[in-house]
Amino acid sequence: NAGVTQTPKFRILKIGQSMTLQCTQDMNHNYMYWYRQDPGMGLKLIYYSVGAGITDKGEVPNGYNVSRSTTEDFPLRLELAAPSQTSVYFCASSRSPNQPQHFGDGTRLSIL
Amino acid sequence: DAKTTQPPSMDCAEGRAANLPCNHSTISGNEYVYWYRQIHSQGPQYIIHGLKNNETNEMASLIITEDRKSSTLILPHATLRDTAVYYCIVNTGTASKLTFGTGTRLQVTL
Image 1: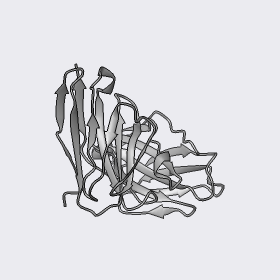
Image 2: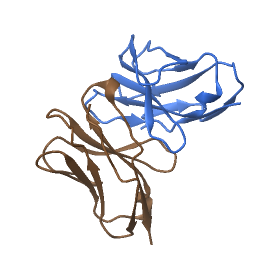
Image 3: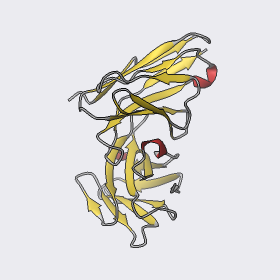
Image 4: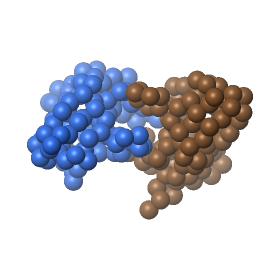
């Protein structure tokens, strides 16, 4: 079972560049989430989605954008990369907010 | 929203039970207690969750005090592969309020 798949696994960006982190899930989950994890810290919620076409901000949304055109996909976009966005990004999905979340393996992003 | 407090680190000998405590003294009646773990830098892995009653599955047991202000995750026979950061989370059922703190770093040793 694939579960939650994130691509790429690693990426180095220059300041000011843009990129899209991809996330797809094959469990038909309505809820999807993007987190970032800085070294030695817990996870912080960036954006989440309750279904196709519906997204909302989490704790740290500045500098990011999301879209949800299908149930399966929930891409995260960085428009103008900044060093403060160097982090590990995790995508997750769940059937509902009261159900366990399933996480991808993460994207390790460095901005230099 | 209920916050959780966990010790930053714990050690456990292989084969022994690992008992990881969590304080959630401000928990509300409809909030679940969830436990996840993160091995190395992998994505967090769901372990177990509960509301009021004690719960057990193939991975662990969850003991919630009667007043629900604290809980304990029990790994009955810890192995080296259980070395990880363990997160205790109070889930309000609101997607925007999910918060992962810094967790407890469990080191299982020979």
